[in-house]
Amino acid sequence: MKKLPLIVVVGLLSACATEANVQPISAANLEEQVEARVEDEFAVPVDVSCPKSLKSEVGATAQCVLTPEGSTSAVVAHLTVTAVAADGQVEFDIELDVPAESGSDSTTAPEETTQPSEDS
Image (cartoon, rainbow, N blue to C red; front, side):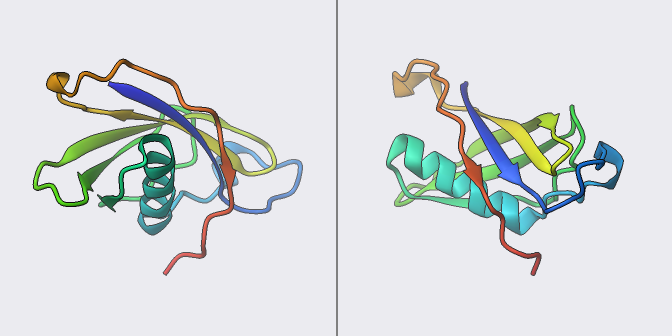
C-alpha cells in the first residue's frame, strides 16, 4: 500500500480551537484533495468518489474509490486523520490498495497544504 500524507486546511478557526469544534472535511473536498494529491504523486488522472465526509479528529477514517483514467479497475484509498491543529489544519494519510503486480515500491509523498472549497 502507498502512504501519501496530506494536510488539508478545513477552515479558519481561532487559536483556541479544539478537535471538537473543527468541521468535518466534506466528501466533495475529500474528492478534490485526494484527486489532486494522487495525480501529483503518480502523474495519472483519476476519478475519485468519496461517499462520506471525514471527521476532523485524530483516528477518524474514511474511504474513497479511485479509478484511473481509461481503466475499469478501481483502487480503494483509506484515509486516516493523523493530526488536528488548533488553527484548523487537518492532516491525514492516504493508503492506496494497489495491486501487487503494479511493481511499485511503497513510498511516502511530501506533505502538502491546501485550501478546500466550500461545501456544495
